[in-house]
Amino acid sequence: MPAAIMLREHGGPEVLRPETVSLGPPGAGELRLRQTAIGVNFHDCYVRSGLYRTLSLPGIPGLEAAGIVEAIGPSVTGFAPGDRIAYVEPRYGAYAEARLLAADRAVKLPETVSDQDAASLLLKGLTAELLLHEVQPVGPGDTILAHAAAGGVGRLLCQLASHLGATVIGTVGSPAKAAIARAAGCAHTILYREEDFVARVREITAGRGVQVAFDSVGRDTFTGSLACLALRGHLVNFGQSSGAVPPFEVSRLAAGSFRLSQPIMFHYLTGRAELERIADRLFARLATGVLTAERGAAYPLREAAAAHAALESRSATGALLLVP
Ligand SMILES: NC(=O)c1ccc[n+]([C@@H]2O[C@H](COP(=O)([O-])OP(=O)(O)OC[C@H]3O[C@@H](n4cnc5c(N)ncnc54)[C@H](OP(=O)(O)O)[C@@H]3O)[C@@H](O)[C@H]2O)c1
Image 1: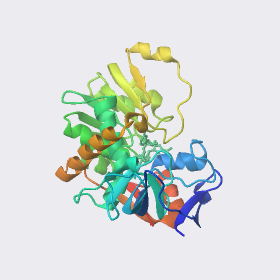
Image 2 (image 1 turned 30 degrees about the horizontal axis):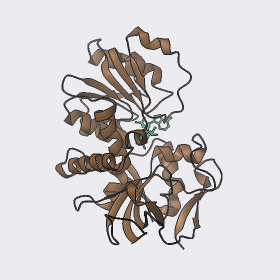
Image 3 (image 1 turned 135 degrees about the vertical axis):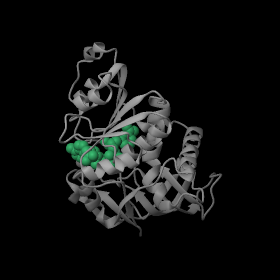
């Protein structure tokens, strides 16, 4: 029977405990997958703590992984046993040695992309692609602000935005993370735990502000991000690593005809064709070096709690993995 991390109650990392689960054959439209690498995302911490009540308990958390198809169910086309695939699955279940998966969530991996890179990059890379192409396209002449610029999504966002020609200002929690952010294309970095990032952004942009602020930190940075915007600027609040943003008076947007959005990646990946199109673009960017995998620590699956503790302590860099 395969091992899995079962969440039976909300709480700290210690509630992530290994168990064994039974797994039947794949049903219609399903694949049975032996997983080789599992991506850890900040979203998983919200699910574990209970901030997000999107997984019914008891349940297996985790949104993304890579692995090998072991068996296919009736009516599955386009996949065969032995295929290497990766997936993002909003219905969770990724923290497991093996699982059943709806085939329409899976993408085949090209030879150029390893299982570990796929598991560490698929969700975060798709998010960066969607933020910079669908939510708010950026290009030459734009100056943008990206918080947590050395983080999983943040580093990829900075790489892609600078490749697209934007000038990127990245905030980071330590000098070591500033070096990572600069290597990812940030023209300027700000140590936002020590410096007033609003004042620094105004200084860097000669008082104009930024066209876009990509804010995944939430509570601690939201007000400052708004204050960094140029006229008609766009605050894209796509995460809340420091906590949820408190209620907000919409009329504050009128101060600069600002725009505010809270995009969710899965709302932009509504069909199979969309998933394949954007995943292909992501894999091509990896193959050409526009985006690079910078894997963080890899933990045995049974030590998922340690991975969550590292992510929440802000000590982690790169994308964390669980290995079954
Ligand atoms: N909307 C979507 O569809 C979508 C998709 C993917 C991810 N996300 C969101 O994007 C964010 C980044 O996800 P990720 O998995 O790549 O994580 P991550 O950025 O690698 O980790 C979070 C980072 O946030 C910063 N941070 C600032 N205040 C923090 C605090 N109080 N506690 C913990 N961290 C704090 C830390 O960087 P510093 O030390 O540099 O401050 C930390 O490393 C998350 O909020 C996630 O939910 C949203």
